[in-house]
Length: 141
Image 1 (cartoon, rainbow, N blue to C red):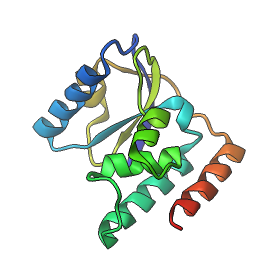
Image 2 (image 1 turned 180 degrees about the vertical axis):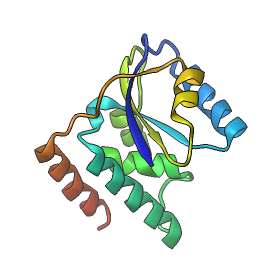
Image 3 (image 1 turned 90 degrees about the horizontal axis):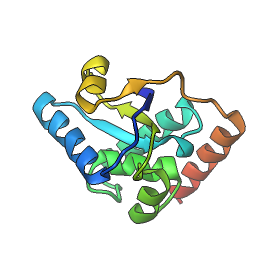
Image 4 (image 1 turned 45 degrees about the horizontal axis):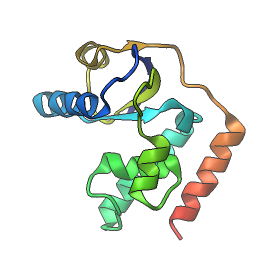
């Protein structure tokens, strides 16, 4: 798993952008998750969300049908998928977001295919990460 902070010129059509991710995934056998950068407080949060989601799938306790949506539930610290999408999903006009590459995806190929550019590092807000980790643990209850 790798996480990248990226920029676009602004997402005009979210569905079209998500379809371009799906096309890339199906053609390349990779998995890419796009998250609103305001919902991401650090890489530890992303790692924990991936761990929780993978564990749910391995135990058959997943809420979402696919791993990416289950990860998004944990990033957003929401039980409901709709709420998680509203909180952590990209929206029209989004310029900065985080891409999570869930397997051995070629970073440069993904950026080029999606018309994105890397824009520095994911900010590390330790106090917010700690709060998110606690909230993730509560989702398990």
